[in-house]
Length: 245
Image (tube, rainbow, N blue to C red; front, side):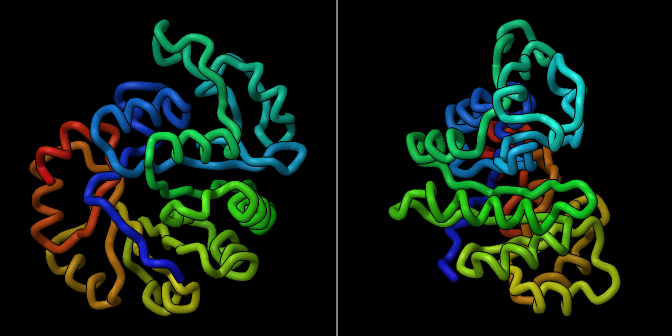
């Protein structure tokens, strides 16, 4: 598995405090603010392609209606994915993953790609991602980190493309999380920062994997997490937290 060049600060859904989440505008903003990596969500479309969107329905972040899995890329890209955030972003589209990869390469950005999936579609989404990465991720670029809360998605990536690093997303350290991380060959633990304290971070670090925390927008909290040994944080405000790092 390739070595990950993880930064301390990763833009969450681009830089979604300043631009509409999961859009090319948000990714460009993160780069302009100094982020070296961005995180974004991908979902499966009707024709089994991948686009950037968090929710399973387009209602919250576009002017449309309908489930992502029921719509074609052309239908999704006909929607306005920016006006809800502000008039300056009117006309911003839902990006396809392929065009996003091209932009990341142009900007020199690394990426954490989070797989979102409806029930029963996690493996299919992982297989689509593995195919697109094989065809379009530049050979001279550092590998992306592929993360998910969906165990089926991580298993799908492990089976289809084991060389891409995988991040296990967890809301809490409970159950046999260590055994799960080992079984999945997880390269990172991506944890909600809110339940964490120094002892829990120390416990997680014993697993021998970098810890990435979501979603941290307070500089003092970021400094505390770094002092405990957290490797990086996801943030809506990369400029604010770059100062803390």
